[in-house]
Image 1 (spheres, rainbow, N blue to C red):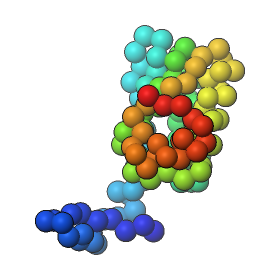
Image 2: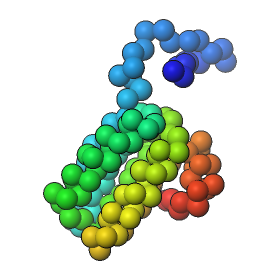
Image 3: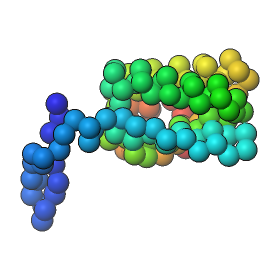
Image 4: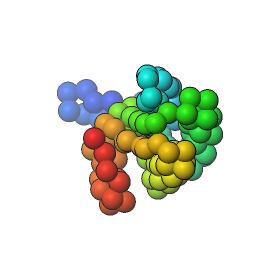
Length: 121
């Protein structure tokens, strides 16, 4: 498990009271018109990506949006499973006649998206 740190006057201090739930990926949704915004947070690894896929697909099925916006502003870690999550959701929404937008990825995630040639705003 990756360690968590807080910074106090330039010195990294380990946080020992954080549990696994603090790192779990979460998603909440905001439907607006023909757009469904999904706000992701936490760490996206293999296990989290599977759960997020199920949640996002269920909301897409319920709302049938023309545009699915995945907002990554709250994501603190993402491995290649997150890239797969994005590509799979893009294919799924396209099969329904819609499109996908990736928004607000943090710097470390932008690097991975650039390598995978995934466009973001």
